[in-house]
Image 1: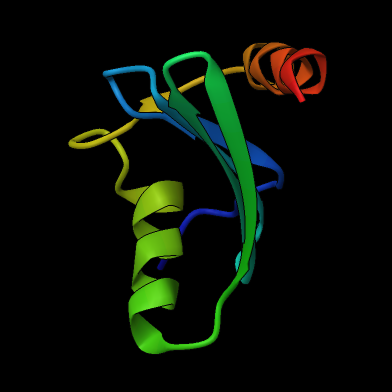
Image 2: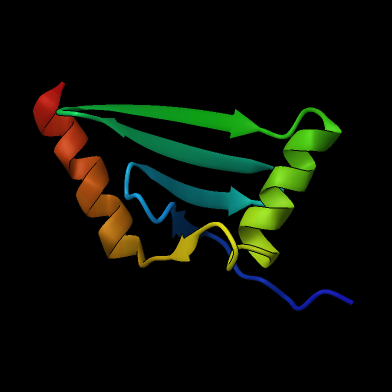
Length: 84
């Protein structure tokens, strides 16, 4: 049985170029940092690999991602609005 999870959850890759906001079990947002440019994409689960990916981001993240705070995620997102 899985533990109860509250959304949103926040993660990043250790290289600090990709940040995630897990909005629900079916939706996430991703910020990619490419040099001085940032890209924001929103995803909705449509196929099984998407469902597995969001499950891993939520419950099995320790091997690949780092848990971060909402403040850290929003700080990166805020940089995006200054660049665009």
